[in-house]
Image 1 (spheres, rainbow, N blue to C red):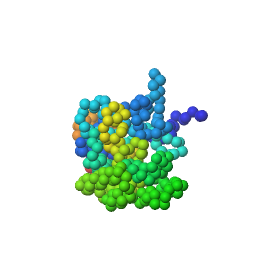
Image 2 (image 1 turned 90 degrees about the vertical axis):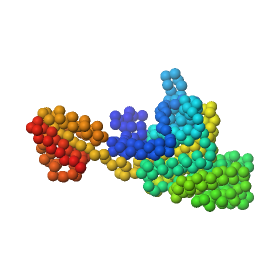
Image 3 (image 1 turned 120 degrees about the horizontal axis):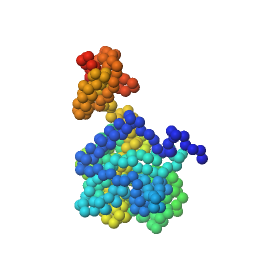
Image 4 (image 1 turned 30 degrees about the vertical axis):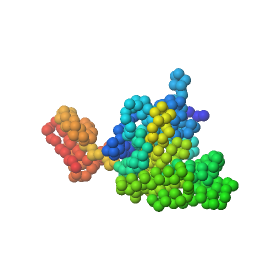
Length: 409
């Protein structure tokens, strides 16, 4: 294998230049402020965790974890999500804190990828975890907050699809009793949104025509509140019906939040069925084929850390939102350019400090004749001007002759 060139990076990682960083930080600030407004407190966890604790508890498959050994030979992982690390903290450092606990985060996470997949191995997530509340109110809260967070990030057109793992588990156990392999194959097709493959799997199974029609009918369970009524008619399984009633309660709460225009019920939407235990959801922006937010209920995770508790939450795919917004992110903050000669240096730098104390971005530069630059740009009036490739909205000039000049928007 040839040695990488000095400017090359590993597959799946990228550099963020100043403009992109400004937009990314803008999204981060806006979304975290939104979450704080809902009572969620920010938490930061380590980039590295033990494989035997957070690694095995993660929803990320083992082959997608970045693993490394420390100097004692212990296997570590780069965090692949934030849910498992937060579960560890809630079960240890926050063990004495009462439930429910509302925590938010913004972090980079890491997942090993196939080189030809064209996906990112390092990306940013901004999300929340609501721990210690099993109610439909809690599930509706995180969905409503996900909607508010997308709006805070600047995403204007999107839809949130919500489903329930329990419905599909109950329906398939009712239709395919004891046939775990067949159930897993069908669920895998739904997880991959492979509806053609789902129908093909059904045709290959030895089932009565009525049962096949019932299982194929799942693909039509997408829409508004009426889907709950249709699903109740489709199955008599206790688990399936209990799950649908829970979903109906969530819808009623979302209606009270006034956000149902952004939500549809999609009972083909299963999430990771080995990890989620109840309601799951994904959000899609109108101009992007990948989900920009996903989440759901995971009531079994905290038991792995010795503190059983129900939990629900979501993660915004912050990097994807950055791609979606393009130039619609944070507009450049105004910069002031202060130029000076040797004699005017003292007064110029004092002025720069005064402006910075007011929150204004200031660049200073010594010129042999600061007034000449002022003369060159003053005819632009109050329009921004460019100097050495940087845009400025104000100019001030200080020189030793006592001549000062300035223009500002």
